[in-house]
Length: 465
Image 1 (cartoon, rainbow, N blue to C red):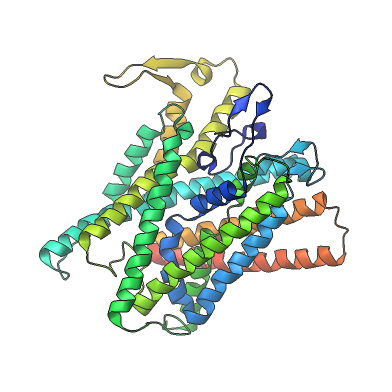
Image 2: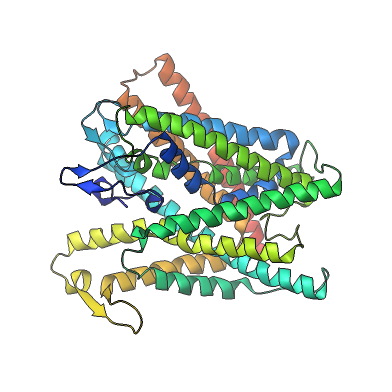
């Protein structure tokens, strides 16, 4: 796995294959197809499981339309962002911006770069929370599926989610201390296989249930609510969930950094983005629409754990086991950038501190020697404990995904790419292109704010209720 300039890595860098090195530096051998594969692997994750619920809130008209709109927005955003890889010229510039923060720093200055890093790390921390919640839900889903199969669907099968969050946190604490865990090639393979496995199972079960029902459930307006205000909040949460599922701006430049040239990297990346967005949108529409068609207004918040499906119980168990395995690796994928940033940050400021810089060899029977650093032990323990604590306090799958999607969508997927595009292309103020893109940014800001307010309301309502 390659580290970006300035030491800042993208959110899902382990998903990107190392192109290899020689004396002259990095050998970039990626193609349009490898880039598209990286994007699809990174984007299709646990967010796909909430899409049936999202469509149920919006209905048959607005639900698929919202997915297509977000697909279009993501396509435009990725096109703008692809031109920010090289500076000052998008095709022939001598400077490569291998990370998001590096590109922001070069184009918009250090102040904007620090804001960008803060938002990135907040997003990565949020992914850790979301993955902890999802893993706990999947653990309970396996136990519930077995209980329902053994004692009947009306049996009082309930399990405490906090316990499984703590178990998942303990596992992550152990994984966080494996040296160079983020460089292990098998992590990407396992995560990708598990992700596609449970997504295809959810799609297949939704399709099979729809065929068995003999009818397509749902309505054009979505789930009815008691008051218009409640409907507005649900719609905003659904938009936040969809926003969580799409953008991949955190990793776009690192994927682009693997591409060979000629042709110019930005041209190849734009074509790869179009391919991956088409595939992802088709997959999302199938999973979301078949889930809604199968369950209508009763579509669960998480397609594989809400128990719209009871049988075959072994397939439900397998799908949720795939989710857990995916999340074990996924948590590390999204946590390692923060770990590496903390290591560099303290090492630069305390170069003479033994606590920060000294490593100690620990030998455990049947395992290779580990080199542990006291700063890493303390920081990573605190980090894992904090994500687990927040997850225990707010164990609400859909609301947390909506909050993360709303928080990150406008600043990271829209604002910074648009502003950098203006610099890269020397777009004049008040020109037609400038006005159109500024209007686009403002509309996305309003949508993001709407989804953010609704997701916060959902979290508060769930917590107080």
